[in-house]
Length: 243
Ligand code: OAD
Image 1 (cartoon, rainbow, N blue to C red):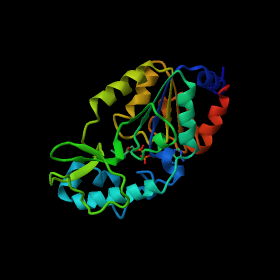
Image 2: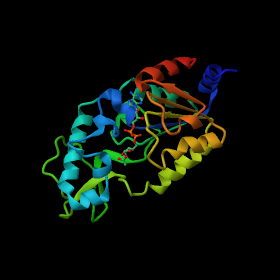
Image 3: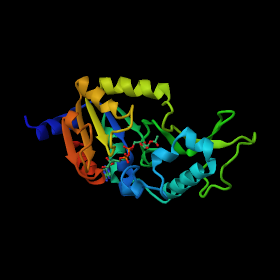
Image 4: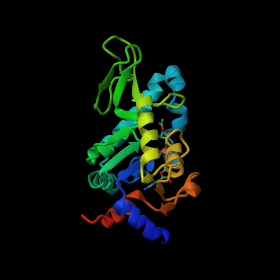
């Protein structure tokens, strides 16, 4: 059986399926990815702004960046890749989506079994009380936002140097080890621990594939890399579904 036949067989017959997405899945919605030229904001990179240290030294600057990103996301809509992933959830008996994205577009496309590993851009958290609130104002004024208690609010996002929610992580590791098919979409696979999930799935016997216009550091571990845009490849793939 060649890899194409194997893909068709696994893709249509698998029962336990995990999808991991990164910024690339939202690229065709018009949301810039983090790395590469388009990932720059003013002259800053995400790695310089998405940290507790950056927030401590200049909360207004960090909030300006998030406000810019919130405005971008607000103006965007889910694309065919998001909708194809939502279709997968309806097709497979056991399905879970893990996303590194904070834009909420998967939910807007209809995904429900989704864990946002890095948080959500529409939520903020009091640095003193830890209280989380949803705030969808665009633009956000004044910056930085304050809690009713007077303390700073921060984005409810997992920053560089911070730990993911241990419950989310346990779920991700558990399902990566149990699934038959693991699909990564639009991630550069350089940020841990998300990048180790497909490797873990592969080591546990899953068929592993990635969808990305470029090869990534995990490509050599995958059973299959489909080079191309998620919004073009995923809608084609779900045509393999028999319903
Ligand atoms: P990156 O910006 O690192 O990578 C985006 C990936 O998407 C690249 O590999 C691109 O080749 C690919 N890509 C671009 N257009 C695509 C398309 N149309 N279809 C499919 N793939 C496409 O984003 P992430 O891997 O998500 O963390 O980055 C991981 C984390 O690093 C982010 O969650 C964020 C960031 O800093 C935090 O903010 C904590």
